[in-house]
Image 1 (cartoon, rainbow, N blue to C red):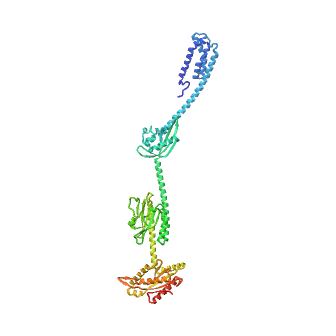
Image 2: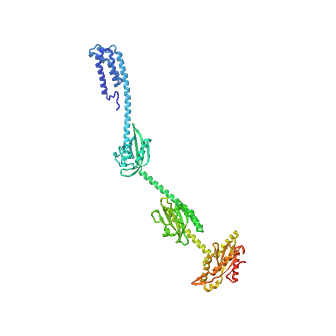
Image 3: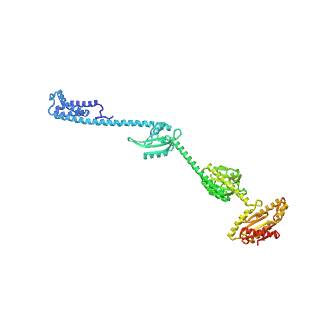
Length: 600
Protein backbone atom coordinates (compact mmCIF):
# COMPACT_ATOMS: atom_id res chain seq x y z
CA UNK A 1 0.00 0.00 0.00
CA UNK A 2 1.45 3.43 -1.00
CA UNK A 3 1.10 6.08 1.76
CA UNK A 4 0.64 9.84 1.38
CA UNK A 5 1.87 12.86 3.38
CA UNK A 6 4.10 11.81 6.25
CA UNK A 7 2.89 8.24 5.87
CA UNK A 8 -0.43 9.08 7.54
CA UNK A 9 -3.09 6.79 6.18
CA UNK A 10 -6.40 8.44 7.12
CA UNK A 11 -8.11 11.82 7.07
CA UNK A 12 -8.74 11.42 10.81
CA UNK A 13 -5.08 11.25 11.55
CA UNK A 14 -4.49 14.32 9.41
CA UNK A 15 -7.23 16.27 11.14
CA UNK A 16 -5.95 15.20 14.55
CA UNK A 17 -2.44 16.33 13.73
CA UNK A 18 -3.74 19.64 12.39
CA UNK A 19 -5.91 20.16 15.48
CA UNK A 20 -3.02 19.29 17.77
CA UNK A 21 -0.81 21.82 16.03
CA UNK A 22 -3.54 24.49 16.39
CA UNK A 23 -3.97 23.65 20.08
CA UNK A 24 -0.27 23.98 20.73
CA UNK A 25 -0.34 27.33 18.95
CA UNK A 26 -3.41 28.44 20.98
CA UNK A 27 -1.80 27.48 24.29
CA UNK A 28 1.49 29.15 23.45
CA UNK A 29 0.08 32.25 21.73
CA UNK A 30 -1.15 34.30 24.75
CA UNK A 31 2.02 33.93 26.87
CA UNK A 32 4.22 34.62 23.91
CA UNK A 33 2.05 37.57 22.87
CA UNK A 34 2.43 39.12 26.29
CA UNK A 35 6.19 38.70 26.14
CA UNK A 36 6.96 39.45 22.48
CA UNK A 37 3.93 41.37 21.29
CA UNK A 38 2.12 41.17 17.96
CA UNK A 39 5.08 39.56 16.20
CA UNK A 40 4.11 36.24 17.76
CA UNK A 41 1.26 36.08 15.27
CA UNK A 42 3.78 34.80 12.73
CA UNK A 43 3.70 31.43 14.51
CA UNK A 44 0.21 30.90 13.14
CA UNK A 45 2.00 29.91 9.96
CA UNK A 46 2.74 26.49 11.53
CA UNK A 47 -0.85 25.21 11.94
CA UNK A 48 -1.82 26.96 8.68
CA UNK A 49 1.01 25.18 6.85
CA UNK A 50 0.01 21.82 8.36
CA UNK A 51 -3.61 22.32 7.40
CA UNK A 52 -2.67 23.47 3.89
CA UNK A 53 -0.28 20.52 3.37
CA UNK A 54 -2.80 17.96 4.53
CA UNK A 55 -6.00 19.44 3.12
CA UNK A 56 -5.01 21.62 0.18
CA UNK A 57 -5.26 25.27 -0.99
CA UNK A 58 -8.73 25.94 0.37
CA UNK A 59 -7.83 24.61 3.77
CA UNK A 60 -4.72 26.83 3.79
CA UNK A 61 -6.73 29.95 2.87
CA UNK A 62 -9.45 29.19 5.42
CA UNK A 63 -6.86 28.55 8.12
CA UNK A 64 -5.07 31.78 7.26
CA UNK A 65 -8.31 33.81 7.37
CA UNK A 66 -9.36 32.22 10.67
CA UNK A 67 -6.08 33.32 12.21
CA UNK A 68 -7.47 36.88 12.69
CA UNK A 69 -10.51 36.00 14.81
CA UNK A 70 -8.57 33.16 16.48
CA UNK A 71 -5.92 35.51 17.84
CA UNK A 72 -8.61 38.01 18.97
CA UNK A 73 -10.56 35.25 20.66
CA UNK A 74 -7.47 33.96 22.45
CA UNK A 75 -6.57 37.41 23.75
CA UNK A 76 -10.14 38.11 24.82
CA UNK A 77 -10.39 34.82 26.69
CA UNK A 78 -7.09 35.55 28.38
CA UNK A 79 -8.23 39.09 29.25
CA UNK A 80 -5.28 40.54 27.44
CA UNK A 81 -5.37 43.97 25.84
CA UNK A 82 -6.30 43.89 22.20
CA UNK A 83 -8.96 41.28 22.64
CA UNK A 84 -11.61 43.76 21.61
CA UNK A 85 -10.26 44.42 18.08
CA UNK A 86 -10.41 41.99 15.18
CA UNK A 87 -7.02 42.91 13.85
CA UNK A 88 -4.29 44.42 15.90
CA UNK A 89 -1.71 46.83 14.70
CA UNK A 90 1.33 45.02 13.32
CA UNK A 91 -0.51 41.73 12.56
CA UNK A 92 -2.13 42.62 9.24
CA UNK A 93 0.93 42.07 7.09
CA UNK A 94 1.86 38.95 9.04
CA UNK A 95 -1.57 37.42 8.66
CA UNK A 96 -1.68 38.23 4.93
CA UNK A 97 1.69 36.56 4.48
CA UNK A 98 0.49 33.55 6.49
CA UNK A 99 -2.60 33.28 4.30
CA UNK A 100 -0.42 33.36 1.18
CA UNK A 101 1.92 30.76 2.65
CA UNK A 102 -1.09 28.57 3.38
CA UNK A 103 -2.29 28.92 -0.20
CA UNK A 104 1.14 28.08 -1.64
CA UNK A 105 1.68 25.14 0.69
CA UNK A 106 -1.82 23.92 -0.09
CA UNK A 107 -1.11 24.09 -3.82
CA UNK A 108 2.12 22.17 -3.33
CA UNK A 109 0.31 19.63 -1.20
CA UNK A 110 -2.38 19.17 -3.83
CA UNK A 111 0.28 18.67 -6.52
CA UNK A 112 2.08 16.12 -4.38
CA UNK A 113 -1.18 14.36 -3.63
CA UNK A 114 -2.04 14.12 -7.29
CA UNK A 115 1.42 12.80 -8.09
CA UNK A 116 1.19 10.23 -5.32
CA UNK A 117 -2.22 9.14 -6.54
CA UNK A 118 -0.84 8.69 -10.03
CA UNK A 119 2.10 6.71 -8.68
CA UNK A 120 -0.26 4.70 -6.56
CA UNK A 121 -2.47 3.92 -9.55
CA UNK A 122 0.57 2.98 -11.62
CA UNK A 123 1.95 0.74 -8.92
CA UNK A 124 -1.40 -0.86 -8.37
CA UNK A 125 -1.64 -1.58 -12.09
CA UNK A 126 1.86 -3.02 -12.08
CA UNK A 127 1.05 -5.07 -9.00
CA UNK A 128 -2.14 -6.37 -10.54
CA UNK A 129 -0.22 -7.17 -13.73
CA UNK A 130 2.41 -9.02 -11.73
CA UNK A 131 -0.28 -10.88 -9.84
CA UNK A 132 -2.02 -11.76 -13.10
CA UNK A 133 1.29 -12.84 -14.60
CA UNK A 134 2.02 -14.94 -11.55
CA UNK A 135 -1.40 -16.54 -11.81
CA UNK A 136 -0.94 -17.21 -15.50
CA UNK A 137 2.54 -18.60 -14.95
CA UNK A 138 1.29 -20.78 -12.14
CA UNK A 139 -1.56 -22.06 -14.27
CA UNK A 140 0.79 -22.75 -17.17
CA UNK A 141 3.30 -24.31 -14.81
CA UNK A 142 0.69 -26.53 -13.21
CA UNK A 143 -1.18 -27.51 -16.39
CA UNK A 144 1.72 -27.68 -18.90
CA UNK A 145 1.95 -30.94 -20.86
CA UNK A 146 5.74 -30.75 -20.66
CA UNK A 147 7.85 -31.30 -17.60
CA UNK A 148 9.16 -28.09 -16.01
CA UNK A 149 11.87 -27.69 -13.38
CA UNK A 150 13.08 -24.51 -11.69
CA UNK A 151 16.62 -24.65 -10.35
CA UNK A 152 18.82 -22.42 -8.27
CA UNK A 153 21.31 -21.03 -10.77
CA UNK A 154 24.17 -21.18 -8.28
CA UNK A 155 23.70 -24.59 -6.70
CA UNK A 156 21.58 -26.44 -9.25
CA UNK A 157 19.11 -27.47 -6.57
CA UNK A 158 15.52 -27.95 -7.68
CA UNK A 159 13.23 -25.27 -6.26
CA UNK A 160 10.03 -26.16 -8.11
CA UNK A 161 8.67 -29.01 -10.20
CA UNK A 162 5.38 -29.21 -12.07
CA UNK A 163 2.88 -32.10 -11.75
CA UNK A 164 3.44 -33.34 -15.31
CA UNK A 165 7.11 -34.12 -14.68
CA UNK A 166 6.23 -35.76 -11.36
CA UNK A 167 3.79 -38.04 -13.15
CA UNK A 168 6.13 -38.61 -16.10
CA UNK A 169 9.14 -39.74 -14.05
CA UNK A 170 7.25 -41.26 -11.14
CA UNK A 171 9.13 -39.42 -8.38
CA UNK A 172 7.28 -37.52 -5.65
CA UNK A 173 7.52 -33.77 -5.23
CA UNK A 174 9.62 -34.19 -2.08
CA UNK A 175 12.05 -36.40 -4.00
CA UNK A 176 12.65 -33.49 -6.40
CA UNK A 177 12.80 -30.41 -4.16
CA UNK A 178 16.16 -29.45 -2.72
CA UNK A 179 18.06 -31.98 -4.83
CA UNK A 180 20.13 -31.63 -7.94
CA UNK A 181 18.81 -33.21 -11.12
CA UNK A 182 21.52 -35.86 -11.16
CA UNK A 183 20.76 -36.80 -7.55
CA UNK A 184 17.19 -38.03 -8.04
CA UNK A 185 18.12 -41.10 -10.12
CA UNK A 186 16.60 -40.04 -13.43
CA UNK A 187 20.01 -39.21 -14.91
CA UNK A 188 22.47 -42.08 -14.94
CA UNK A 189 25.57 -40.26 -16.23
CA UNK A 190 26.32 -37.98 -13.27
CA UNK A 191 29.64 -36.64 -14.55
CA UNK A 192 28.16 -35.63 -17.90
CA UNK A 193 25.24 -33.95 -16.13
CA UNK A 194 27.54 -31.94 -13.90
CA UNK A 195 29.56 -30.86 -16.94
CA UNK A 196 26.35 -29.82 -18.69
CA UNK A 197 25.30 -27.78 -15.64
CA UNK A 198 28.59 -25.90 -15.64
CA UNK A 199 28.17 -25.24 -19.36
CA UNK A 200 24.66 -23.95 -18.70
CA UNK A 201 25.95 -21.58 -16.01
CA UNK A 202 28.54 -20.31 -18.46
CA UNK A 203 26.45 -20.00 -21.64
CA UNK A 204 22.98 -19.50 -20.19
CA UNK A 205 21.40 -22.02 -22.58
CA UNK A 206 21.68 -25.70 -23.45
CA UNK A 207 19.57 -28.01 -25.57
CA UNK A 208 19.55 -31.78 -26.02
CA UNK A 209 17.50 -33.27 -28.83
CA UNK A 210 17.51 -36.75 -27.34
CA UNK A 211 18.30 -37.07 -23.65
CA UNK A 212 17.67 -40.50 -22.12
CA UNK A 213 16.12 -40.40 -18.63
CA UNK A 214 15.12 -43.24 -16.36
CA UNK A 215 11.81 -43.32 -14.53
CA UNK A 216 11.53 -44.44 -10.95
CA UNK A 217 10.21 -47.85 -12.06
CA UNK A 218 13.27 -48.34 -14.29
CA UNK A 219 11.79 -47.50 -17.68
CA UNK A 220 14.04 -45.65 -20.10
CA UNK A 221 12.40 -42.75 -21.91
CA UNK A 222 13.73 -40.24 -24.42
CA UNK A 223 13.44 -36.51 -23.72
CA UNK A 224 13.92 -33.25 -25.51
CA UNK A 225 15.67 -31.06 -22.90
CA UNK A 226 15.91 -27.24 -23.11
CA UNK A 227 17.31 -25.13 -20.27
CA UNK A 228 17.63 -21.35 -19.91
CA UNK A 229 19.04 -19.04 -17.25
CA UNK A 230 17.04 -15.85 -16.63
CA UNK A 231 16.77 -13.13 -14.00
CA UNK A 232 13.88 -12.84 -11.53
CA UNK A 233 14.29 -9.60 -9.52
CA UNK A 234 17.85 -9.90 -8.31
CA UNK A 235 17.99 -13.69 -8.48
CA UNK A 236 19.14 -15.93 -11.35
CA UNK A 237 16.83 -18.86 -12.02
CA UNK A 238 17.25 -21.87 -14.30
CA UNK A 239 14.16 -23.17 -16.05
CA UNK A 240 14.29 -26.63 -17.60
CA UNK A 241 11.63 -27.70 -20.09
CA UNK A 242 11.49 -31.46 -20.58
CA UNK A 243 9.36 -33.04 -23.30
CA UNK A 244 8.75 -36.77 -23.65
CA UNK A 245 9.66 -37.68 -27.24
CA UNK A 246 9.63 -41.46 -26.73
CA UNK A 247 6.72 -41.99 -29.11
CA UNK A 248 8.24 -39.63 -31.64
CA UNK A 249 11.57 -41.41 -31.22
CA UNK A 250 9.87 -44.76 -31.78
CA UNK A 251 8.17 -43.37 -34.88
CA UNK A 252 11.46 -41.90 -36.12
CA UNK A 253 13.27 -45.17 -35.41
CA UNK A 254 10.55 -47.11 -37.20
CA UNK A 255 10.75 -44.71 -40.12
CA UNK A 256 14.54 -44.96 -40.16
CA UNK A 257 14.37 -48.74 -40.00
CA UNK A 258 11.88 -48.76 -42.85
CA UNK A 259 14.16 -46.42 -44.79
CA UNK A 260 17.19 -48.57 -44.02
CA UNK A 261 15.30 -51.70 -44.98
CA UNK A 262 14.16 -50.07 -48.20
CA UNK A 263 17.72 -48.96 -48.89
CA UNK A 264 18.90 -52.53 -48.30
CA UNK A 265 16.19 -53.81 -50.63
CA UNK A 266 17.20 -51.30 -53.29
CA UNK A 267 20.85 -52.18 -52.82
CA UNK A 268 20.09 -55.89 -52.94
CA UNK A 269 17.99 -55.33 -56.05
CA UNK A 270 20.82 -53.42 -57.67
CA UNK A 271 23.29 -56.16 -56.69
CA UNK A 272 20.88 -58.80 -57.97
CA UNK A 273 20.38 -57.00 -61.26
CA UNK A 274 24.13 -56.58 -61.61
CA UNK A 275 24.64 -60.25 -60.75
CA UNK A 276 22.03 -61.26 -63.35
CA UNK A 277 23.78 -59.08 -65.94
CA UNK A 278 27.19 -60.52 -65.06
CA UNK A 279 25.87 -64.09 -65.09
CA UNK A 280 24.29 -63.48 -68.50
CA UNK A 281 27.54 -62.06 -69.89
CA UNK A 282 29.48 -64.94 -68.37
CA UNK A 283 27.02 -67.46 -69.83
CA UNK A 284 27.41 -65.93 -73.28
CA UNK A 285 31.18 -66.23 -73.01
CA UNK A 286 30.84 -69.82 -71.80
CA UNK A 287 29.02 -70.62 -75.03
CA UNK A 288 32.02 -69.40 -76.98
CA UNK A 289 34.63 -71.29 -74.95
CA UNK A 290 36.13 -74.32 -76.69
CA UNK A 291 38.55 -75.40 -73.93
CA UNK A 292 38.39 -75.76 -70.16
CA UNK A 293 41.18 -73.19 -69.75
CA UNK A 294 39.02 -70.62 -71.53
CA UNK A 295 36.18 -71.41 -69.12
CA UNK A 296 38.54 -70.90 -66.17
CA UNK A 297 39.70 -67.56 -67.60
CA UNK A 298 36.10 -66.36 -67.88
CA UNK A 299 35.42 -67.44 -64.27
CA UNK A 300 38.56 -65.62 -63.07
CA UNK A 301 37.21 -62.46 -64.74
CA UNK A 302 33.63 -62.56 -63.43
CA UNK A 303 33.84 -64.25 -59.99
CA UNK A 304 35.60 -61.27 -58.28
CA UNK A 305 32.92 -58.96 -59.71
CA UNK A 306 30.14 -61.18 -58.38
CA UNK A 307 31.82 -61.52 -54.95
CA UNK A 308 33.98 -58.39 -54.46
CA UNK A 309 34.00 -58.57 -50.64
CA UNK A 310 34.62 -62.31 -50.44
CA UNK A 311 37.47 -64.63 -51.30
CA UNK A 312 36.92 -67.71 -53.37
CA UNK A 313 38.35 -70.54 -55.39
CA UNK A 314 37.33 -73.06 -58.04
CA UNK A 315 38.58 -76.63 -57.94
CA UNK A 316 37.93 -79.29 -60.60
CA UNK A 317 38.28 -83.05 -60.56
CA UNK A 318 40.98 -84.55 -62.74
CA UNK A 319 40.18 -87.29 -65.23
CA UNK A 320 40.78 -89.95 -62.58
CA UNK A 321 38.27 -88.26 -60.21
CA UNK A 322 40.80 -88.82 -57.41
CA UNK A 323 42.23 -85.30 -57.16
CA UNK A 324 40.84 -81.75 -56.99
CA UNK A 325 42.99 -79.22 -58.85
CA UNK A 326 42.71 -75.55 -57.91
CA UNK A 327 42.27 -73.71 -61.23
CA UNK A 328 40.87 -70.28 -60.19
CA UNK A 329 41.17 -68.19 -56.99
CA UNK A 330 40.46 -64.59 -56.00
CA UNK A 331 40.49 -62.39 -52.91
CA UNK A 332 42.85 -63.00 -50.02
CA UNK A 333 45.12 -66.00 -50.24
CA UNK A 334 44.52 -66.87 -46.58
CA UNK A 335 40.84 -67.49 -47.27
CA UNK A 336 41.34 -69.82 -50.26
CA UNK A 337 41.80 -73.60 -50.01
CA UNK A 338 44.95 -74.81 -48.30
CA UNK A 339 46.43 -76.75 -51.22
CA UNK A 340 46.30 -76.43 -54.99
CA UNK A 341 45.73 -80.19 -55.14
CA UNK A 342 43.78 -82.24 -52.59
CA UNK A 343 41.58 -85.34 -52.54
CA UNK A 344 37.81 -84.87 -52.89
CA UNK A 345 37.32 -86.41 -49.46
CA UNK A 346 38.81 -83.28 -47.86
CA UNK A 347 35.67 -81.32 -48.77
CA UNK A 348 32.36 -82.02 -47.02
CA UNK A 349 30.40 -80.63 -49.96
CA UNK A 350 31.91 -83.26 -52.27
CA UNK A 351 31.42 -85.95 -49.65
CA UNK A 352 27.74 -85.21 -49.14
CA UNK A 353 26.96 -84.00 -52.64
CA UNK A 354 25.32 -80.82 -51.36
CA UNK A 355 26.22 -77.34 -50.16
CA UNK A 356 28.30 -77.19 -46.97
CA UNK A 357 27.99 -73.89 -45.08
CA UNK A 358 29.89 -72.82 -41.95
CA UNK A 359 29.08 -69.55 -40.15
CA UNK A 360 31.52 -70.01 -37.26
CA UNK A 361 34.77 -71.72 -38.16
CA UNK A 362 35.73 -72.02 -34.48
CA UNK A 363 32.85 -74.37 -33.68
CA UNK A 364 31.84 -76.34 -36.75
CA UNK A 365 32.63 -79.29 -39.00
CA UNK A 366 35.40 -77.90 -41.20
CA UNK A 367 36.75 -79.00 -44.55
CA UNK A 368 40.38 -80.13 -44.45
CA UNK A 369 41.37 -78.02 -47.44
CA UNK A 370 41.13 -74.75 -45.43
CA UNK A 371 44.28 -72.81 -44.56
CA UNK A 372 45.27 -70.96 -41.39
CA UNK A 373 44.20 -68.40 -40.38
CA UNK A 374 40.72 -69.76 -40.81
CA UNK A 375 38.10 -67.62 -42.54
CA UNK A 376 35.33 -66.22 -40.35
CA UNK A 377 32.72 -68.03 -42.47
CA UNK A 378 32.71 -70.07 -45.66
CA UNK A 379 30.71 -72.33 -47.92
CA UNK A 380 31.53 -75.00 -50.50
CA UNK A 381 29.20 -75.84 -53.38
CA UNK A 382 29.60 -78.96 -55.58
CA UNK A 383 29.85 -78.32 -59.33
CA UNK A 384 27.33 -80.76 -60.76
CA UNK A 385 25.41 -81.16 -63.98
CA UNK A 386 23.73 -84.07 -65.75
CA UNK A 387 24.33 -86.34 -62.72
CA UNK A 388 28.08 -85.77 -62.86
CA UNK A 389 30.31 -83.90 -60.40
CA UNK A 390 33.05 -81.74 -61.88
CA UNK A 391 34.52 -80.08 -58.78
CA UNK A 392 33.63 -77.43 -56.17
CA UNK A 393 33.15 -73.69 -55.71
CA UNK A 394 34.58 -72.30 -52.45
CA UNK A 395 33.50 -68.92 -51.04
CA UNK A 396 34.67 -67.39 -47.74
CA UNK A 397 34.90 -64.23 -45.65
CA UNK A 398 38.44 -63.09 -44.74
CA UNK A 399 39.48 -63.74 -41.10
CA UNK A 400 39.38 -60.05 -40.14
CA UNK A 401 35.82 -59.61 -41.46
CA UNK A 402 33.10 -60.40 -38.94
CA UNK A 403 29.67 -61.43 -40.08
CA UNK A 404 28.14 -64.12 -42.19
CA UNK A 405 27.56 -65.01 -45.78
CA UNK A 406 24.02 -63.82 -46.43
CA UNK A 407 21.29 -65.89 -48.00
CA UNK A 408 21.63 -63.74 -51.09
CA UNK A 409 25.35 -64.52 -51.34
CA UNK A 410 24.66 -68.20 -50.78
CA UNK A 411 22.02 -68.27 -53.50
CA UNK A 412 24.34 -66.41 -55.86
CA UNK A 413 27.12 -68.92 -55.14
CA UNK A 414 24.75 -71.81 -55.88
CA UNK A 415 23.66 -70.13 -59.12
CA UNK A 416 27.28 -69.52 -60.14
CA UNK A 417 28.12 -73.15 -59.36
CA UNK A 418 25.20 -74.28 -61.52
CA UNK A 419 26.40 -72.08 -64.40
CA UNK A 420 29.96 -73.38 -64.09
CA UNK A 421 28.84 -77.00 -63.79
CA UNK A 422 26.63 -76.66 -66.83
CA UNK A 423 29.42 -74.95 -68.78
CA UNK A 424 31.87 -77.74 -67.95
CA UNK A 425 29.26 -80.36 -68.81
CA UNK A 426 28.54 -78.66 -72.14
CA UNK A 427 32.25 -78.37 -72.84
CA UNK A 428 32.74 -82.05 -72.08
CA UNK A 429 29.79 -82.91 -74.29
CA UNK A 430 31.18 -80.74 -77.08
CA UNK A 431 34.56 -82.37 -76.73
CA UNK A 432 32.91 -85.78 -76.82
CA UNK A 433 30.92 -84.89 -79.91
CA UNK A 434 33.97 -83.36 -81.54
CA UNK A 435 36.02 -86.40 -80.68
CA UNK A 436 33.35 -88.62 -82.14
CA UNK A 437 33.33 -86.54 -85.30
CA UNK A 438 37.12 -86.62 -85.82
CA UNK A 439 38.07 -90.02 -84.37
CA UNK A 440 37.55 -93.52 -85.56
CA UNK A 441 35.28 -95.34 -83.15
CA UNK A 442 37.07 -98.69 -83.55
CA UNK A 443 40.73 -97.73 -83.25
CA UNK A 444 40.48 -94.44 -81.38
CA UNK A 445 42.70 -92.82 -84.01
CA UNK A 446 41.75 -89.68 -85.92
CA UNK A 447 39.55 -90.36 -88.92
CA UNK A 448 40.03 -89.42 -92.57
CA UNK A 449 38.08 -86.18 -92.16
CA UNK A 450 40.45 -84.99 -89.46
CA UNK A 451 43.38 -86.17 -91.57
CA UNK A 452 42.35 -83.90 -94.42
CA UNK A 453 41.85 -80.89 -92.08
CA UNK A 454 45.11 -81.37 -90.20
CA UNK A 455 47.13 -82.17 -93.34
CA UNK A 456 46.33 -78.80 -94.88
CA UNK A 457 47.19 -77.08 -91.62
CA UNK A 458 50.52 -78.87 -91.23
CA UNK A 459 51.45 -78.16 -94.86
CA UNK A 460 50.83 -74.45 -94.23
CA UNK A 461 52.99 -74.53 -91.11
CA UNK A 462 55.78 -76.42 -92.87
CA UNK A 463 55.87 -73.96 -95.73
CA UNK A 464 55.87 -71.00 -93.38
CA UNK A 465 58.71 -72.44 -91.28
CA UNK A 466 60.46 -73.91 -94.34
CA UNK A 467 60.66 -77.30 -92.63
CA UNK A 468 59.93 -80.77 -94.05
CA UNK A 469 56.74 -82.70 -93.41
CA UNK A 470 56.81 -86.51 -93.42
CA UNK A 471 53.90 -88.75 -94.50
CA UNK A 472 53.69 -92.48 -93.79
CA UNK A 473 51.05 -94.72 -95.37
CA UNK A 474 50.73 -98.06 -93.50
CA UNK A 475 48.74 -101.15 -94.50
CA UNK A 476 48.29 -104.50 -92.70
CA UNK A 477 49.57 -107.39 -94.79
CA UNK A 478 47.19 -110.23 -95.61
CA UNK A 479 44.40 -108.67 -93.54
CA UNK A 480 41.54 -109.73 -95.85
CA UNK A 481 42.34 -113.48 -95.74
CA UNK A 482 42.91 -113.16 -92.01
CA UNK A 483 39.57 -111.41 -91.59
CA UNK A 484 37.80 -113.96 -93.77
CA UNK A 485 39.32 -116.88 -91.87
CA UNK A 486 38.86 -115.74 -88.25
CA UNK A 487 35.89 -113.44 -88.71
CA UNK A 488 35.21 -109.75 -88.49
CA UNK A 489 35.38 -109.73 -84.69
CA UNK A 490 38.94 -110.95 -84.72
CA UNK A 491 39.77 -108.47 -87.46
CA UNK A 492 38.28 -105.63 -85.47
CA UNK A 493 40.31 -106.74 -82.46
CA UNK A 494 43.51 -106.59 -84.51
CA UNK A 495 42.66 -103.12 -85.84
CA UNK A 496 41.84 -101.92 -82.31
CA UNK A 497 45.16 -103.18 -80.93
CA UNK A 498 47.05 -101.63 -83.83
CA UNK A 499 45.30 -98.31 -83.21
CA UNK A 500 46.30 -98.42 -79.53
CA UNK A 501 49.87 -99.28 -80.52
CA UNK A 502 50.13 -96.33 -82.89
CA UNK A 503 48.77 -93.89 -80.27
CA UNK A 504 51.45 -95.06 -77.86
CA UNK A 505 54.33 -94.90 -80.33
CA UNK A 506 53.95 -91.49 -81.96
CA UNK A 507 55.34 -88.15 -80.77
CA UNK A 508 53.16 -85.45 -79.28
CA UNK A 509 53.11 -83.45 -82.52
CA UNK A 510 52.56 -86.49 -84.74
CA UNK A 511 49.11 -87.29 -86.05
CA UNK A 512 47.96 -90.91 -86.42
CA UNK A 513 44.83 -91.55 -88.51
CA UNK A 514 42.86 -94.46 -89.84
CA UNK A 515 42.73 -93.78 -93.55
CA UNK A 516 40.24 -96.52 -94.29
CA UNK A 517 39.88 -100.31 -93.79
CA UNK A 518 43.24 -101.67 -92.66
CA UNK A 519 45.13 -98.66 -94.01
CA UNK A 520 46.61 -95.99 -91.67
CA UNK A 521 48.34 -92.64 -92.15
CA UNK A 522 50.95 -90.86 -90.03
CA UNK A 523 51.79 -87.17 -90.34
CA UNK A 524 55.24 -86.34 -88.93
CA UNK A 525 55.84 -82.55 -88.71
CA UNK A 526 59.50 -81.53 -89.17
CA UNK A 527 60.65 -85.04 -90.19
CA UNK A 528 63.10 -85.36 -93.08
CA UNK A 529 62.95 -88.28 -95.53
CA UNK A 530 65.61 -90.16 -93.62
CA UNK A 531 63.90 -89.61 -90.28
CA UNK A 532 60.51 -90.50 -91.73
CA UNK A 533 61.87 -93.71 -93.27
CA UNK A 534 63.65 -94.63 -90.04
CA UNK A 535 60.52 -94.04 -87.98
CA UNK A 536 58.49 -96.15 -90.42
CA UNK A 537 60.98 -99.00 -90.27
CA UNK A 538 61.05 -98.81 -86.46
CA UNK A 539 57.25 -99.12 -86.36
CA UNK A 540 57.37 -102.06 -88.78
CA UNK A 541 59.77 -103.97 -86.53
CA UNK A 542 57.76 -103.28 -83.35
CA UNK A 543 54.46 -104.26 -84.96
CA UNK A 544 56.01 -107.66 -85.71
CA UNK A 545 56.42 -108.13 -81.97
CA UNK A 546 52.81 -107.16 -81.23
CA UNK A 547 50.74 -110.00 -79.73
CA UNK A 548 46.97 -109.78 -80.11
CA UNK A 549 44.88 -111.92 -77.76
CA UNK A 550 41.58 -113.12 -79.17
CA UNK A 551 39.60 -115.34 -76.77
CA UNK A 552 42.82 -116.86 -75.45
CA UNK A 553 44.30 -117.31 -78.91
CA UNK A 554 47.33 -115.21 -79.87
CA UNK A 555 46.97 -113.72 -83.31
CA UNK A 556 50.05 -112.94 -85.31
CA UNK A 557 52.69 -112.19 -86.05
CA UNK A 558 51.46 -109.06 -87.81
CA UNK A 559 53.36 -107.46 -90.66
CA UNK A 560 52.81 -104.15 -92.36
CA UNK A 561 53.86 -102.47 -95.57
CA UNK A 562 54.76 -98.79 -95.45
CA UNK A 563 55.22 -96.05 -98.00
CA UNK A 564 56.86 -92.75 -97.09
CA UNK A 565 57.03 -89.32 -98.72
CA UNK A 566 57.92 -85.80 -97.61
CA UNK A 567 57.05 -82.23 -98.39
CA UNK A 568 58.44 -80.58 -100.45
CA UNK A 569 60.50 -83.35 -102.10
CA UNK A 570 57.52 -85.38 -103.31
CA UNK A 571 54.90 -82.65 -103.74
CA UNK A 572 54.00 -79.09 -102.89
CA UNK A 573 50.51 -79.87 -101.51
CA UNK A 574 49.23 -82.22 -98.89
CA UNK A 575 47.26 -84.32 -101.35
CA UNK A 576 50.25 -84.61 -103.67
CA UNK A 577 52.51 -85.88 -100.89
CA UNK A 578 49.75 -88.21 -99.68
CA UNK A 579 49.40 -89.71 -103.18
CA UNK A 580 53.16 -90.12 -103.39
CA UNK A 581 53.23 -92.01 -100.09
CA UNK A 582 50.27 -94.14 -101.20
CA UNK A 583 52.09 -95.02 -104.43
CA UNK A 584 55.15 -95.98 -102.42
CA UNK A 585 52.94 -98.20 -100.25
CA UNK A 586 51.67 -100.10 -103.27
CA UNK A 587 55.24 -100.54 -104.43
CA UNK A 588 56.10 -102.01 -101.02
CA UNK A 589 53.24 -104.48 -101.31
CA UNK A 590 54.22 -105.38 -104.84
CA UNK A 591 57.77 -105.96 -103.69
CA UNK A 592 56.69 -108.62 -101.21
CA UNK A 593 55.18 -106.72 -98.28
CA UNK A 594 56.71 -106.25 -94.77
CA UNK A 595 58.93 -103.42 -95.93
CA UNK A 596 59.32 -99.65 -96.18
CA UNK A 597 59.49 -97.96 -99.58
CA UNK A 598 60.18 -94.26 -100.14
CA UNK A 599 58.49 -92.25 -102.85
CA UNK A 600 60.53 -91.49 -105.94
